[in-house]
Image (cartoon, rainbow, N blue to C red):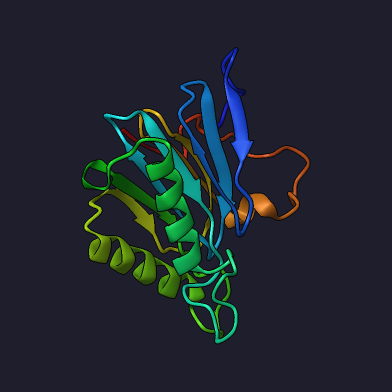
Length: 180
């Protein structure tokens, strides 16, 4: 279960088609993902990191500069890190999302995940943590200076209204994953 932010922590929510970069040790970047993917990149030596949130892997003709697409989102994030002192040869990645949220339609989540891993491999950026696929949404927290990340998988039954008057007890650590 996600708890409130520690005193002094500053949370920044990264919405679809956006990215954030920070050198502030008090910042925690957050997002909620379904079929979308977020790459969390950081340079541990420079103490800078960031997160993006993209909807689709590749832009159709004429939409090259649209930040909702993977190529643009990844380029903007990497360039943002470099502008804040990161060195490409030290950048590391953790990648989240890419769930299959609906059955019977194109599995865009899988395509997003494949794109992110291929892009990072082509750029020579090692992926040291990954949580892609599945059928559930995720809440992500990322501390960009340290590279620490935490994920909470959102159970689909948690989204539905409860059928009984008393909800079933939930374990405090159910569905959470923390990557250091």
